Amino acid sequence: MIDIINKIKDDFWTLLQESNSPDKIDSLRVKYLGKKGDLTSLLKQLASLSIEEKKSTGALINQLKDDITLKLEEKFKYIEDQAFKTQLLNEKIDFTLPANKIKKGKLHPITLVNNEIQAIFQELGFIIAEGPEVENDYYNFSALNFPADHPARDMHDTFYLDYHEPRLLRTHTSGTQIHVLEQFKPPVRVIMPGKVFRSDADISHSPVFHQVEGLYVDKNVSFSHLKAVLQYFLESFFYKGASIRMRPSFFPFTEPSVEVDVACVICKGKGCSMCKQSGWIEILGAGLVDPNVLKNVNIDPDIYSGFAFGVGVERLAILKYGINNIKLFYDNHNFFLEQF
Ligand code: DAH
Image (cartoon, rainbow, N blue to C red; front, top):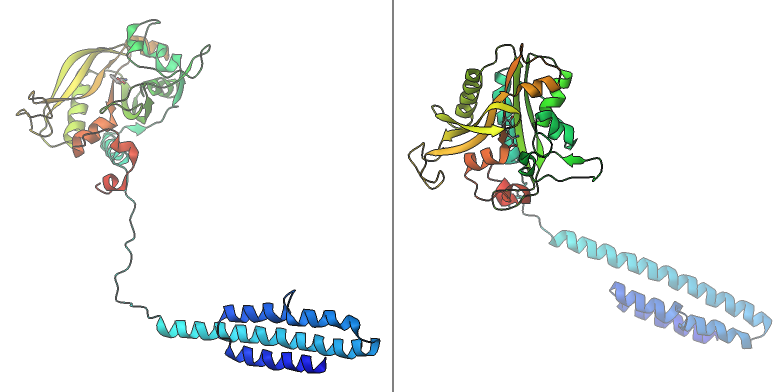
């Protein structure tokens, strides 16, 4: 038995010298220490020995087992250290290579246009207010002088949230006029940006889009104030000297109401494909606040008057940056956003 143990020891030494990879060390471990390994089968053979022999031989085998375990661990660590040293020697970092490009975030074109609109009106003393996106019929329609069952409601393609007590997604920012006038008494000069929702989608319509509402209520506010403010706004936003024109229109909450056009931002009024050769581009709706709206918020229309307007932010961005599909605003592809 002693001879066998010595032979195993010698063989192990020889094999250990020859093993130069983690895999080979592992095979040695299995060969000597594994369940069916040489030492395990030796231990099993102890059964046939006398008690004394069992003690002495068993101790020898266990000693060998500890030695082998330790030697395998040492060799394994040595191999790993060598591999790491070789790696360090071979791996050279070229500090002259250009670094990876870090992409810088940019503001979304809708945000840029919103910021610009707000900055222009803040110069004129307007403050900014935001209203809720979930409204009820009162704020979105009734208080704005839409009579019940009036066809103008159908034009809004409203998303209703409940059937019995109608909450809805606001179809325009005009309802915020009511919230503001419930809280602030004239003089009120306010810009109300926000998301609006309509059940409508094609190349120039999205079910969610952005509007900016404007409102000025004070004593003696007249149509000429509206015209001057919009002229200033559109010239500041598009280009100095841009002419505007007003065409009669209808909105329940303004009387009189107008549709405002700006001389085409591409051809400056000469006629091109953008303005369908008309020289004009429709930009926004506006008018003098209907006396019924003022009455709904307990403001006396015999003392106060006001003007209001509403403008689509996507529309302004499309015209300013020459964008041909409204979906581009919402896909948020880098190739699009990087351009602003
Ligand atoms: N709320 C209208 C719409 O979404 C836009 C509008 C028109 C707003 C005239 C106004 C206004 O304040 O005076 O189509």
